[in-house]
Length: 69
Image: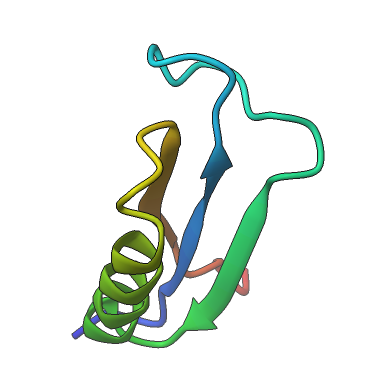
């Protein structure tokens, strides 16, 4: 369980196998998700859909809760 953090699945097609730069127009952002488990479920789905494409990669990113002070 998170303490108010949000989770995002980000990625797309990269221009080379070093995964440093996305191909223009290929970026994808999914979310926000309230739990890491929801983000992992999404990550598994998009990764499976693109597994035949070796230059496509997705990651889960946590956005920490913002302080209200």
